Length: 402
Ligand code: AMP
Ligand code: MG
Image (cartoon, rainbow, N blue to C red; front, side, top):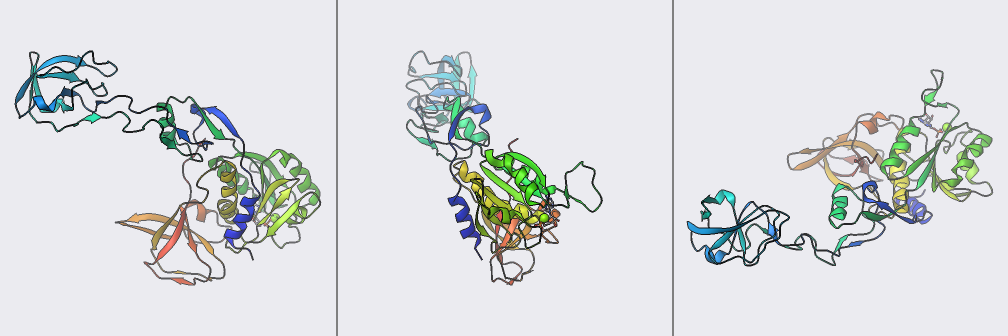
């Protein structure tokens, strides 16, 4: 059976980078930069004061108690009219440019001022309380690399670089098709033994937080005709995700359709738990991941395979869930037959990160995902991990771009 890494490699080999588009900065949250940003400016543009206080030349302040004449007052946004004169201080506000000749700012708390003069109560050090031109960003600097995710800080940096527009990758349209005779839409009249399509909701959310645009195709019955009919509208998508219909049952037809003319089946089944029945191929040339139907398997396979694919299409630098090592709260036993993705709760305990399972781990128990914040990844062959030993954890992504 294919390893997770090999299966992911095959999928990533079949999805392509989307073209870039230039958008306004206000719309850029959650998007991926399509080019590196090289600054044409220095930030700050001028040496300026980090404090409200007095700009001085340290030569003029040999000792505590020195009294200087207040030459002028400089507010932020004003340019100094003349260089500092000997024996003088310039009253200066935070952000105001440092006058020529000044080499320190004494903060107001360390002074006493009266009648045009100021007593300096603390001898300043050279360059104290001065923010230098270019100390944040220098001209010609690569400030943000291509493929970076634009969050609030990155967008703020772009704004300070005076860039109202930004080149980002287009967002992939990701079609979702749920399958199953027993599956119903929320809100539809349904008998008590039908199952509501929670996968439609988890997948829509997962696609959105990964930067994709969900294209919801509804629920197909377990019939080739209905599946094919519903898949017609997926032709305009960049990626298709189906849920269910890829196991060993008599009515698991998604994989069968992938084997028909015009479609492809690249592989079926991956060595992992949950999520073994995964099919990958294409429908009418559009790459398609046949996710297993069980709600936990659907989400796990999304995180391991669909998420990296959606991120690759956007040119993202980081496409895998971030990993940390945490200590087990309790011993953990496992069959060891496949790599196991156990839903866990990761938390701090003193200086340590500790982790424990969310409770029952059946692949139909979606609350095991809802209660958790990570996967504890147990490698194949590991049957027992002692309490206090380390386990690798993959952290669920946070941050919702709505
Ligand atoms: P399947 O792989 O089609 O046999 O589906 C496995 C199980 O997953 C089914 O028995 C359902 O309980 C569940 N399932 C399938 N599709 C969905 C869905 N869209 N929403 C929630 N559960 C589902
Ligand atoms: Mg089914």
